Image (cartoon, rainbow, N blue to C red; front, side, top):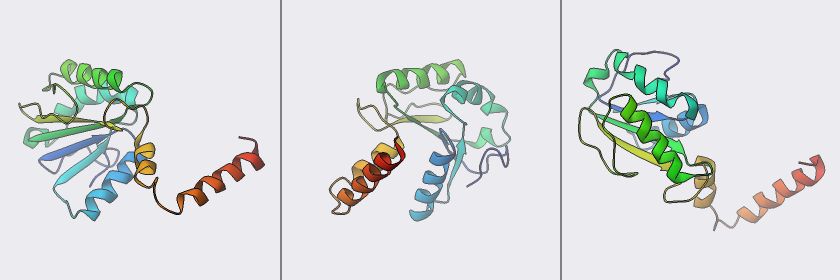
Length: 155
């Protein structure tokens, strides 16, 4: 996978756009773990940059070969507003707009949007990862560690 800062050329027919460098590292590692080498992952460098990034995307060398485009973004405080913002950005860029998260919009390319965490919950990728381990027996130790750091450092 190639970071957008390293190269503008899109090498693969599947493209995943992620919010920032942490998301890029996460999805690169996940796709590597899943042995998926057919997806190009790029960061659009923050939610405020999605609209201009999408507008410029058709100019990237290799974009004409993209058949599917996925866009991830943290819900932050408002999942419904996040979806609306992404859809407005897609429309403004002349790209297909899905009706809902995880619903494929047909067109060239096909587009799917993933708001993280899924559903109507506020949050971000980190919250989703922590939720995956909430029943792990080590989580009380992790929570205790962060409580200790907060008490000692005054955060």
